[in-house]
Amino acid sequence: MKRLISLSLALCLVACGSGDDLTLSSKAGSTQTAPKAGEFAFTPKEFVQAFNTASRNYGKPFYMNSAEIRHGAVHDYFQQIFDTGISITASVSKDTGYITTITALVRRDGSQADRDIVFSLSKIVTAATNPNLSREKITDMVNAMLQESSPSADAKIFPQRFINHVRYALRNDSGVGYWWIANPI
Image (cartoon, rainbow, N blue to C red; front, side, top):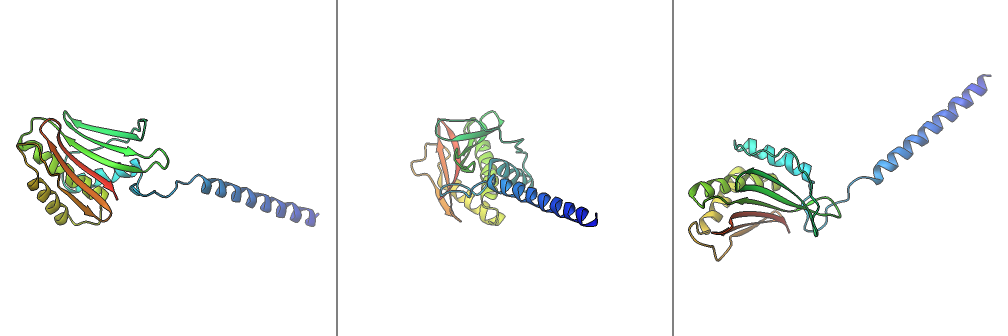
C-alpha cells in the first residue's frame, strides 16, 4: 500500500511538474518580440508611464490617461489631446507593438505661449524617450532648437539633434504650428 501511495504521489508530482512546464513554455511563446530598427524599446503603455513620470518631474500639468490604439493603414497609432491645439500622437508598429515615432503638436495662435508649451512638451517627450539625459542637457537642447526656429515665419531649416540613437526634430509652420518629433534611428 505504501508503494502504491508513493507511486501515485510520484506520478502526481511528475504530472504537475509537466503541467507547469507547459504553462511556462506557452507563456514564453507569447512574450513580445524585441524592437526592430526604427522602433523605440517601449510599448504605448510604457511610453504613457514614462511621459507621465517626466511630466511630474518637470512639474507640468500634462497627463496621459492611457494609450487607446487606433488602427491605421500603415501604422497603428494613439493620440492624446490635452487642450485645443495641443496633442501627442505616437505611431505604433503593427508587427511588434513598439512605438516608431512620437509627435507633439502645438497649434493655437502662434504666440509666445505656444512656444512655451512646445518647450515644455519637448522636454517631457525627450525625457520620456531618453531617460538617461540630464534635465540640463534636455533643457539646453530644446532651447537651442527653439532659438534656431523662427517664431514669426515658416522655418526653412528644421533644427534636429541626434542623441543616443534618437532623432529629435522641431518643425515650425505658420499654418500647422510647432511639431516636436522624436524617432529612433
